[in-house]
Length: 349
Ligand SMILES: [Zn+2]
Ligand SMILES: [Zn+2]
Image (cartoon, rainbow, N blue to C red; front, side, top):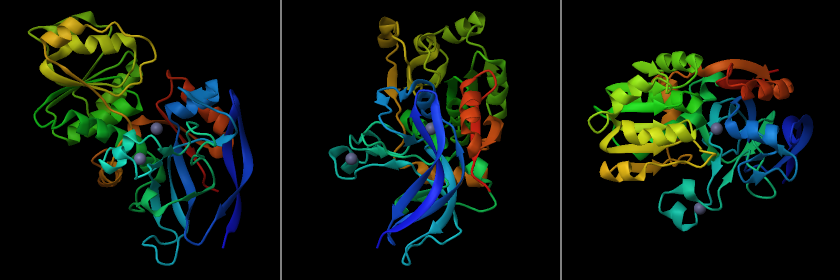
């Protein structure tokens, strides 16, 4: 039998139009209802608010934003392993588990993927910036209640970082460069350290982000504008075994080829918007591998454990916190990269 629950949520209507509105959730006794506690604002949320679309996903009707969020179990089926009141991180990805990619264990390539807070399909899939959400049991990852929801709100971007490490392969004993020290770059730094890299250098134009990179575990933070350092790293067929490009700027992508060692790996995590003058001749002469990394596969549970154990401490990345009623101000603040890394939105009473 269907039950109903009214609650408030953050609906993106169109460009620069976000509203707190009441919604009615309909669920059955087989569903999991989660009372949301906190969430993180991600690039796509900012794009929906500032531009009315995120890449090719265009808002066609009001959509609840947010795909990085955690909460408490409010209702669970009697035979569920989940208990009311238990704290859970929510995996926002809902692959079809039927297509060739899903069956091959590559759910991040699922063409039928229903990702929460994404306008890719019409009707859109509502996100987690809502007082309550209905999810499936498989999406719920219980976590230790001594960990703050603000920390566990990093479970989704941490999963993205761990997936990027898995794309690179073993980092044990490797020299690593992370280009771009925003939230994803910062989490890649911490994940690379946890994965055995012996030298991690971060590159970011912003001094604020360089400082955060050091707090996240980088041994050194440099500016991409420092030509001298980059020339040094480019000598003798390059320096880094693995380069993570988490910035997406054309100049950054182009520079990966010079600084990565012959036979090394470049993992592309940053979404580049502009066309790139890629140094093909140098890339082939060095036999580099350029690999894309997109979302994640089965790394969500690992991210929850690493955050729980403190193997990754995301706190240096938290730049401010807002109540969901102030989500518009939170989005405006998150857009300003001079002051913001990860902006947290809370749903506490
Ligand atoms: Zn995200
Ligand atoms: Zn699929």
